[in-house]
Amino acid sequence: MRRQPKREKSRRPAEYPPIRMPGADYRRFRGMLEVFFRLIREAGKVGRFLTHGSPHADEFGAVEVLQRFGWKILPGVRQARIEVWENGAVLPEGKTWEEHAREGTVLIGLGGGPFDEHPQPDGQPGFPGECAATLAARAIRAPAEGTAGEFIAHIWRTDTRRASPWGIGEIIKSLHRNHPDNFSLVVRLVRMAFRAWFRFSNCRGSEKSFFLRVVARWISAKKWENELLGYEGGQIDEEWAKWKDRLNDSPATKKAGDLKVARYLELEPLLIYAREFGRGSRKEMMEIGALSDAIACNEGAEGAEAASHWWTRRVLDARLADQQRFVKAIIELNEKINSGECLVGCVRTGTEGEKIRVAAVVSDNKRMNAVVRGRYGIGAAVVVIRQSDDHTQVFTSQKSGVMLDSVVPAVRAKELEKRTNSDADLSSADLGRPGMGPCGRWFYHRVQENRGSMLLNGSTQAAKGVPPTALSLQEVFEAVVSALTP
Image (tube, rainbow, N blue to C red):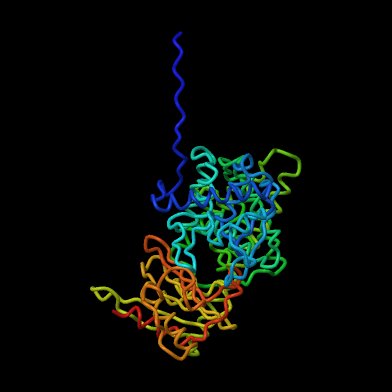
């Protein structure tokens, strides 16, 4: 039998979404990696990861990729601990990413290093279109196919595309909001999910799904512990009769019907998701139902089901707390609209004169932004949220397609003028660049492909060190409306 010649291995590095990194970015990235690996070799091993407060799925995904696939070239990476740096106004611990690497610390999603895609205060553009997980995968040339490739691509989509409210991205955000002072618990829950998914990525329950049984027991416990608001209203009445006939589709929806809580607004999204999950619907690979079942299957060891029950209840608690904040934000917004405390403006944009709404309100509710933008609120395309400590954020609705490119220089110029009592002697380009601007108060996060953007004056977790703006809510609102008006 004639022996087939060996196929020569390609020297081309594995690629991840987006398919190619632009040439200039790739050369800069490779240059950073040469320095990074040299400094890690000098340090002897990786001792810890340092990321920003409330890390997203892509930061957790980057750590998972480096630990799972990079242990041969990064000694100690599997045992490295994860810590957060919440002061967004300065360098992490006052050191550059190179100084951290020399000490065996890997910066993820901050500090301007090879694993930070964000624009930097010095004008460096970061790595547009990438996320921390894809940068980590490129750095160690993680597998681009199979389960590894699916994981990396999914984390990238979660970070850069509109994601399922029941997917891993929203799960992580909810866990941070529900456990702001227990980062180690969040790390444990996320790692449990990742570990199980890599072993049982195709695990899929049916009507007998473990997840659906846990949801039914969890709803019953919440009812008797009186942990449901019981705020009724806002349902889609014309669909209610059809949905009610299908309550027996899963243990979760049947239990909610039996307990007469099926129409509670804070439970409605979960019940709809449970119903669709029981029918086989799965919008994302790493949704709560699939992860719950995967954890129950993990390793087949005794106690695995108990571990899944523990994980699922904590995630459900976090999602319920988020939905309760949402309902409370509806009530709070209605009260502020009636009392005149909510500012609302209408702006004509574009050549066709399309109208969009701009709204501003003071609230410490973390779901107020979503309510003001949504159907239970004002339907605003641009929202200004001011916290009680005067930190202020400007958000846009993804579906509106509105970007803040004209708003950013206007707000930053007004900030500098207010603080220095003189006009800003800076160009519009300097004032409008992404990242932390020259005024040191406003961080512009410009999302690619017109999927919305954010102008952040600090935040509750990720950038606690940024001082509050000197501008009043009225001044920020006026600057936004004026900048958006053609």
